[in-house]
Length: 172
Image 1 (cartoon, rainbow, N blue to C red):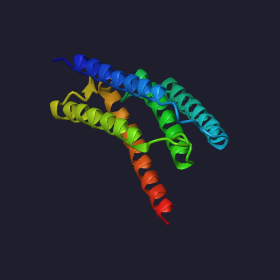
Image 2 (image 1 turned 90 degrees about the vertical axis):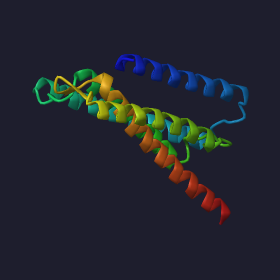
Image 3 (image 1 turned 30 degrees about the horizontal axis):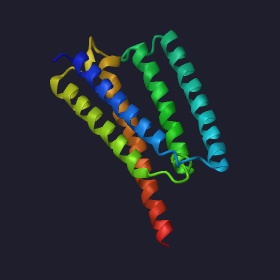
């Protein structure tokens, strides 16, 4: 199987999992955000937007100066956007606004765990086969799994730590 076929299959699996989770969530719509969580999420969106704006501006300057020779522009833009999504998720997790009021963290932990494992396997496969760089550059095809792995791993670790802290606080 070619590398592009594997990426397409992984994306289809990921999309299928996300759609499945969204459909399950709609059926059991007992989870809602309270007013404070909505305000925190709005602040998270704002921080994420400005993160994306700053990173894409920096990317533009680096591209124009010819200082971005080791990655393709498409991969660099994708990485900047994924970092901004990660900033939003981590901000909301740390401020108790990622999960709805009666939200179940196990569902999110499972979903993010699956994504981390899939992207981790893809990253390791690229490393072992020596297909990480194409023409001396990190491309979207080989770099996207690395970015997804790192970003979702950061979100997963933050969610695990916050869930453990919240459980300890509830026990006390």
